[in-house]
Image 1 (cartoon, rainbow, N blue to C red):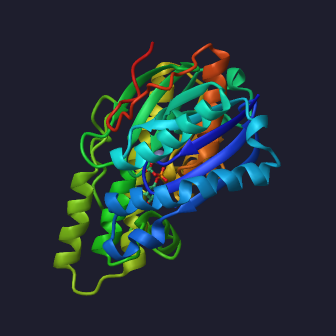
Image 2 (image 1 turned 180 degrees about the vertical axis):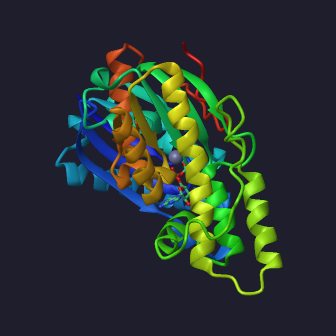
Length: 334
Ligand code: KG4
Ligand code: ZN
């Protein structure tokens, strides 16, 4: 089954053609980073205007790279939430329009749920479950217990800032570029992880919730009271604090739920130190770890098409009346 997946929930215009939820024939991502960089964050009006200008081109490109015509597509999927309302509208309506024109099924996909399954794309999903999955992006920090496709229970999530947001805000305080995560990751390699003792918020508390706003404030106070700042040391120490909490809670969640499989997804799961630490912890315990390649961690259409395949297999086709859901949650299904 060949599915066209469309993703425009934030600042990436993406379309992909994926066969049977696994074989990626194309995955075109047009990033708006340059557009938003002067503002240090995503400007919704600019994002939606850019999605509108590009969505047709990106879809055509995805089909061309896949060597498929519109008629060879069996179903169309698009992210309908969560995300920026005016951005979601563009991809969702484009997807519904193509599906309507072709007379093919349309599937609306929850963007966060798509992140959840993105590390499993290269594997049979059944063999990887049950698992504990960490979703860490610019908008989300969620720990999930997954027992089947569409069967998941949220164990914990951030009470304030998302991990990626925290990376971006810390980078802004350090006057680094936007988005901050990749810059902090790069500079941290030259710094000392133990130079500054930033707080590990909520690590010692029971449960699996996170809080990152205090860490951002600690970076601010450190910078205010320090005359000569070594940016690499701040990056390394800050990153270690975030990673300690993410890894600590993920390992605890896996241990408590008794699973032996862990995965991580979302933009922050590109982070080299997070990947390294998760690999160490899982290897030590004999657990399997699934991480997506970088281009499938950040927002992309392939993860939308892949999850749509599994939804269709489970008999869950959407309808063309589906509206955007800018603030939908991941849902509790078990
Ligand atoms: O999943 P994503 O592309 O978009 C959302 O759905 O939010 O994630 C973007 C976030 C940004 O906050 C960015 O700074 C962060 O992922 N990020 C990183 C790295 N690469 C991207 N954070 C830490 N280390 C990285 N290498
Ligand atoms: Zn995302």
